[in-house]
Every structure is written in C-alpha cells, then in structure tokens.
Image (cartoon, rainbow, N blue to C red):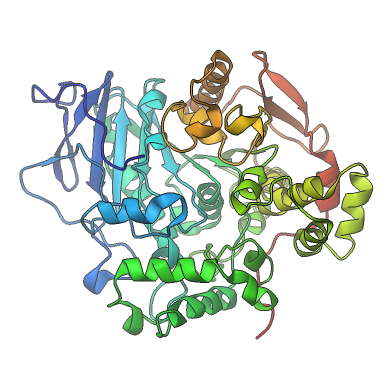
Length: 522
C-alpha cells in the first residue's frame, strides 16, 4: 500500500482541461494535473492552510493563493495518525505539513460540463484515515460520468480531542471547509456545485450523519450516502476525560498551551497508548472503552448541537436525499482483528450483551430472538447492532419519520477472501463501490483474483451510487415504516428487493434512542 500518486499514463503536452496535462484555474491559482485512462486527475490541492504553528488546533483557515502553475500530480501528506494498519508509518513517510488537501477525478474538466459531484469521506474510527490510499482512487467511478473528490481531514487528538482553548470537532470543521472548497471551485473541473453528493463509510458515514445535523454544512450538498454509520458521538465531558488521559501519557494537560508545541506524531502515539488500555476506564467511559474508541464527534452545542438522529427527526435533513445501509456481518472483521473470531466465551458474550444491548433485559431479548445462537453469534450480533447496523437503520427511520426520503440497502454478499471466514463484513463495500478490487488492504477481502461475480456486484453497486448522485434514484423504492423494503446486494445478478432482513434486531432496538455517550463516573 502506498500513499503516493499513481503514475499518470501520459504527462506530455500542455494547455487546457482537455489536454494530456490538463490545467484548471481555482480560487488559489492555476493547477496542472495529469490524464489517466481518459480521466483528468488533480491531486494534493490545498483547501485550507496547514494547521500547524499558530494554527495548531484551530479551525481551518482559507488557503492563500500561489503564483504560477502549481503541479497537482501527487497526493498531499496525510495528517498525523494512529498506528492501526500501519497508517502511522505511511503518514511519517509523507513529508510536509500541508495536511488539508483535496483530490479530483473528472471525465470532462470543462466549466460547462455540469456533471454530478461525489465527495468521499473516508473512515478509520476517527483515529486514522488518508485520501491517498489506493482503494480510494476515484478513476473508475469518474468514468461513469461523475466528478469524484476525496480529501484529508484531521483525525485523533488533532481532529477530535477535546482541548481547552480549541474549537471542538476540528476534523468535522475540516470536512465543512473541504465542501466549501468544492462549492467554490468544482465548476472548473466540470462539476455542478448544485449537484453534490457526500458519501462515506464507517467513521466517514458517521461524518456524513454529522454533516446532516450541522447548520454549518447547509447548502453544501443535496444528497448523502452513509455506508455503515458509526454510531458513536460523545458528550463534551466524555471527550474531555479521554483527552485528559491522552495528554497525561505525555505528562501534560489537554490545553492548547500544553499541546501545541508537542510533535504531532507523539500525540498520535499517546492516543494509541490510551486506546490500547481503554478497558481500564470502562467504569468511566462505558461502551467505547470496551470497543477501544477514544475519538468521535462531540455534541458540543455549537457545530453539533444534537445527535444526527435527533436532528433528522427534527427535520434537519428533510430536503436532503439519503441513501443509507450496512453490511450483514459488520463486526466479524473486528472480531478477527481482536483475535476472538470463533473463540468467544460465554462470559464474553454475556458482557457484550450487557454493555452494548439496549436496556437491562437486552441479553434476555437477544437470546429469546436468536435461540440457536451460540456465544460467537450473540457477540457478533450485539456488537454489529450497537456500532453500525442499528445506527444506520435508525438514521433512515428518523429521516422518513420527518417526511424526508431515504433508500436503504444491506450488503449480504460474503467476502471470498481470507478463506471466506468474514462473511459480508465491515469495509467490504469500499472496494465494491469504488471498483478497486485489486488494490489496497480491503482488496484482501475480495481475494487474490477478483471473480466475475465480484466484478458484476461492484458494477451494480457503482451504478446505484452514481445513479443516486445523478438523479436521486439508486434503483429501488424509498424506505417506509410499513413495508420496510431494502435493496440486498448479493451474488444474484438480478435486483433483490426484500423486507429489511434484520427484523429481530430491529424489534429489539425499536424503542432505543441513540444519544451522546456520557461520562459515567465523575
């Protein structure tokens, strides 16, 4: 895996947006990109000033203009981040502090093209993530007639730590700044700023949900796709307590004065250290301690006044067309990474049911609804429901209840890679939606050589996503609370429409309200 730009197919020539070295003019100046397999590509475009020095922990500031023609053929350096999946090493290897950059793929970089725009927000538990990963290459999607945008945003303590003297949700503010850049500049790349769809997965889908809930993002997009919404949002008290623990790893306080001079890689390491021992704070931090989730958006009363579910129930997203869904076996991959796949003890299953289930009788209700389930299945079910499946479904239900429109899907195709043990697991949708079945770490889920079945399923998902971005119709009816029809993406070539298949879980969680996670013991 690399974060560098792929080699353009031809860097010869010069001139306009239709040349082999396409040029466009944006607010900051002139950019020169490359042309790759018929698509104009521009990488590493700054959308905000580097958040370092006096701007450390500040809200993003508009980028200053540059002179001459700026090359845009390499990804910008990713923000400092944690070490999961080797992301810390990738971040260290990419020199520079210009963390806040966007990348654009366009099939027709002409200001009059008027193409729909798809803006991707990557996941990574709000602790890792960078737009330069090969699985996020937007070339194949762009060839389907859309302009694709990806970008970096601050993660970990830099982006989501609750630091005294700094605004909360800096990572989310970065996302809003990137969308403002899209609004102001995407026409130069052939995009229509009035036809912007945001789409994201996991923490990226949690970000999509948060953007639906914040007034600061109003008018920046008209459609949204949320793939496996990560359902964790923190109260300021919980976020502050976790940040204090991270700062204490360095013998410091969680303040701008104490932390602004600390090397960003040391902050990321401190976050990892706390994440590795969150179970020692279980009495204070609750469920996120059991799942080792030290960072999430904060319901701060300003950028995020309420949770996304409450905001949508209040009508905040009524005019936004929504596509939302999840995979069938969300946390099976996480169980494998935790070393408990196929080895969950009855005690571990019971703890999971008590910690993550809705209400005091959750364990009884799960066992009653799934009488044949053993410890592994119960553990997987309640983890998946709490972290991804029910947050996604409830987002659609809140949208629908407020008079908005939501289309719901579930990915049920079992991943053939890794011996086929992971089923339709978390992250499987990423290579399928982008069509990058043979590159990046998620490609391991597809297998060494993508099968015709995988290629065909990927084509169907790409067609649904791009159709939604273009016309607001992914190809199946909107969800309603009577029939609850959802699209199932499986191995069948024909469209599969069925009642929501996780009915037992839906009933267990139907009276649950997802709220900001509190600090339990002060």
